[in-house]
Amino acid sequence: MRSVAINVGANTNQPGFRGPIFDDGSFEYIPIPESEPTRSNADVPTYADLELETDVGTVAETPVHLDPTFAGVHDRSSYTYGDPHGVKARPLLELDEGDVVFFYATLSTVDDDSAEWIAPEWGAYVIGHFRLAREPLDADAFSELSADERSSFAENAHLKRDPFDAEVLLRGDPDGSTIYETAIPLSSPDGGVDANPLVTELSGDSGKGPWWRRPMKFDRAGTETLLEIHRGERPRICE
Image (cartoon, rainbow, N blue to C red; front, side, top):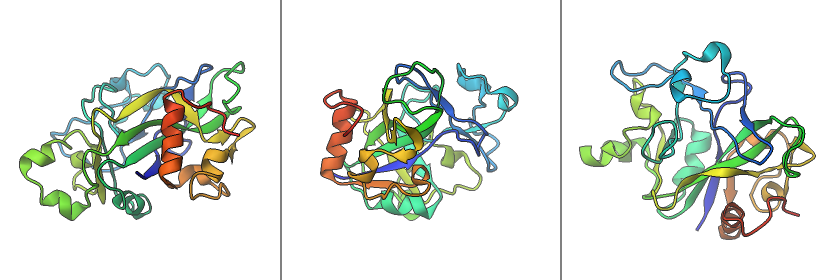
């Protein structure tokens, strides 16, 4: 079992703010805006449609690129993810059915009196994961699926774009995929730019430079550690 962690969600570039992390480690998953043309009949929600607690200001009526989708979140019913960029697609395409994909986001700290593992101002946090229901698909493999097989990806934002542009598509097993109630920190409690040992010791990333934007690879031990933290079997601060 292997895994890859992928950066997702609102950030200071798109749409200009991050989602919040609250004092108990709960958070709000806010997607980026949709930046490409979409089919005229596609169901593309706006930020206002998501009924967010966060005040999104002037972008409320902006369509969103809701990717990944988590069942039960933002009116979605499936676990899907797609990406058009080779830097993310390549490591994901190396995975197999049963492997894990973690999704992490940069989140802004809302409260001064937060849990001790929450970084001041902002940090990077794992917000959910997929256990892959099938092997990742590149664009050619997806085109060869039957109509019924393609329908399981129907909620994915890349299928709503015109033209379709994903270089990789993932589908999570509903029994092994989830968005978290409590985030897992990848940043040090001292500051968002400082990677903690989950990054520097358990992934293949050095933790240098803008590590919080890069895909991270984890072997079996690293994958199991992240899953154990999610299940509450290990502390969120890893020494």
